[in-house]
Image (tube, rainbow, N blue to C red; front, top):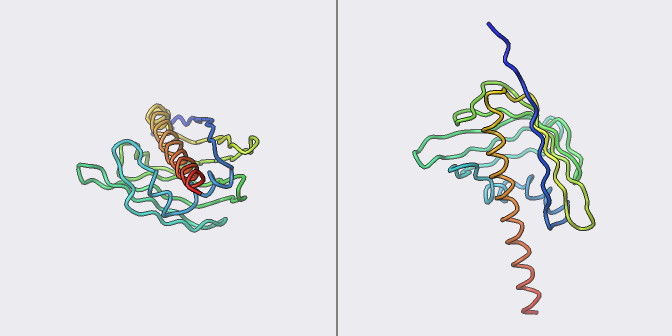
Length: 159
């Protein structure tokens, strides 16, 4: 049996929101369900036990009715700075059958946030798929957070 070649994917994204706000969007189960929709999937359930040793599980439904899950264990949680967690995908197009490692760093950039994402131990055959998936997820989060600022601007203008 040959060994699977593993690779690392690194991404960086900027958000016009505080790192506390971006951290909350990643770690609040109800809010995560609102924006986490990779590809054509819709997140139907999110369970988050945000502490070292705690577990998370996202359940997603594809329009064809199939179900995919993401799950893992939080290895490190430093609010609102950093999350390190294992990552296991089952039932989707990126079903790798093994455990990867995801590190999220939330860097304060003067009231805005830089998110540094490092996804390690990805099978080389899945790296391009994950790259496009992370592009979509980051875009969804940016859209979600920009809706926040539009609502708060509207509220301020009405005051």
